[in-house]
Length: 454
Image (cartoon, rainbow, N blue to C red):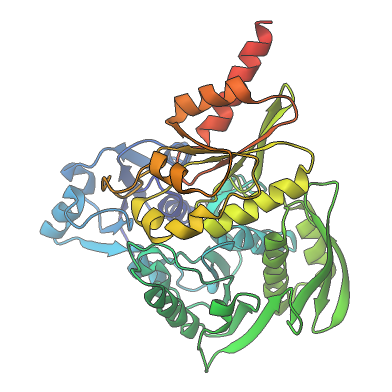
């Protein structure tokens, strides 16, 4: 496809990643978004033109317009493009063009897909395969979320939102788990599971499923070759003797079809990341990577920004940031925190994300914070939604089953509360898919300023 490709909503993680790959392939790319972000700044550093604000003139001269799932159909740029006869595609419709000529490895699931995608990419890159990749987060080892690689493999995080992953027909696919999410796209769990089943049936080579997740294991794809992994008996890839290590992650033994392959040391904590590691081992093994090489890569893997990222420490207070915004993710993240910081008082600072998710999973959120000592609930981050006047941060706080839970309001008031009450030895973990991570950075700055004034 010749000519300039214009991307509406280019400032998001997924769309900015596509833009980077296109630019790396030598294509002319431009984009627009409502506000600046770390992603738009990174694109501009690459020489990609990014307009802040949506305007008709942004699409002039474009040969194709690609729109984020968050962009409504009546967006002025989409309307103007169609009036000019310019094709407008969503991600799902654009994937075949982007992935053309590549062997695709796609990682799907409600939880864990970003880390698993990053692990697979790092393992393949370390053995010289140089894959292209798109990841829904910033990989610390690559210092980016996407790349156009020289190899014939394309590793992609397969996002289920708005059924975007239905545009991918992968040679190899992983499904980490299937748990209801995105109720604005999938009103019922049945509709959510059926979308994953359609994705599973699109696999042309090997489907790798987490055996421990009943909904993933139950997916029907009769004509697709399957392999599984898990911590339960009988998995093709399994682990045992899991224990925390001095690197802040986990040590564990890895087995392939009952054969002991060896001890592994990882920097990323929690049993959920042991599962993610098993999925990565299964993928790269199927692509011919020796276990010893994959193990070495895992040991050096530094993870993904905003996935249990230790932001810093000041006056004995440690700040960790995590993208967890679904109840299951919150539970796993807090359990990882108690394993890594067993003697610390743990503050869970939760920024609720999207009204539809909060309503659909109200009971699950109620029980998600048991591992924390103190829980603060911020204002709702609406993201692509608007305030429905039905649910709010203080209402969520009142509903959480915890003896030490408070509503803390916006970012500034949350920082102020924490700065008054945290003490040396405390761990503050921000749980947010929005801008709640700013709380941790600002808290460290305030503590440092306070210390300097003494």
